[in-house]
Length: 488
Ligand SMILES: [Zn+2]
Image (tube, rainbow, N blue to C red; front, side):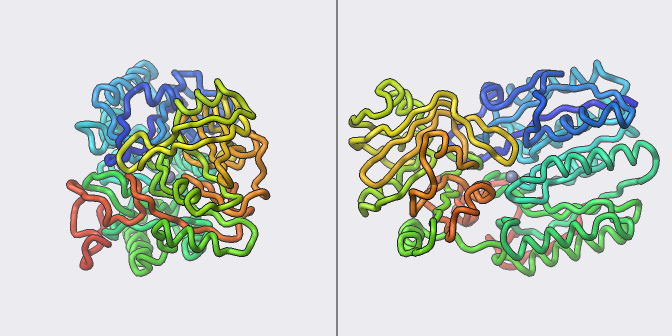
């Protein structure tokens, strides 16, 4: 048995000011064929898991290239085509294969390709033929199009947000693919579209219980797998939105009914899946009035993990203006300011301009007399078990406000952003984190209050702040009256 695996993944924010090229992928994560490191990455779990299971399960794995780029704007057409064609050429050389495993994100948009994954899968299907098993793993912030569901044999989607389960869903994908190859199951998809988008953190109710429920449905009554594609609101494509994907073991009618039921439940609770995002003043006021351990102000509107620059200065200006003590902001992306601080070194005091660079929403830069608390070459942070590089990094102090600067753009995942610079979370009462939800795994246990604020920028949590041109309508919450439908 011969199985080919590869990965092509990014989450395209079509509203982002940052262009995306092949170089963006090579700077984030690129493993040429056979050179994937021996540690898991978010979107390469199918290849990583298959590599570990090949010998015991009696198949030969042919490894193709793996690409991932930090979320940013629409990908340059020729760059998408060059990465796609690299994988397709490897697949061509690997033929004949019994199965193809693809690690995708699912919100990849290139100029000329609103559904890049659909295009890639179509070309893969043309090479491998109709009977080959194609298995895909997606991030829930994907656009789950009909085309993809029809082209793949079976797909899994991370169930957790934060995405701590990417390996588990990779294991399940390979299990489903192997069972299909051995003729033990026949996965049949049902895809339901409730015509909505919402934000679905799984660390809080009601989504926690909803995810536990869909997990409990699997493996019974012919239900093979149940996924909720949350959708990615910062991608202006026709298919943006929440979708329910159910695979049954050749029980289409029951699968359709279940997908529709779950979709109806998502819609019935629309607007209740997460607390509302506050404006900055209201969020700051709530955090500063808090008397518990640590108050965290999440700033999803400037989340690098969704395509923002992460150099918006609004909260820093406000914390300084209010003379707040024991506050910190992490992390501002500003490679030039980091370089200045590295040259000056820890312990220096100097005037510095930082932040407020990438777009008008980044706001005016901060000009201040700063104390450089610490510097570190080649810093990193943990996201679950994965090590995420942040590049050279420094900690600054301006009065009572500490700021972490990084030179590789990424959202706040791990507390190492602070600890690697000798700073401890216990010394703060308010933290501003540039992230929407992924910070919750590592920072959540330290906090007794978490609020989300909107400071402008290309990642608003309120969908009504985006002007969509391509999204198909009617669509909740842009339109009040919508009608859900079974797509597959
Ligand atoms: Zn995601």
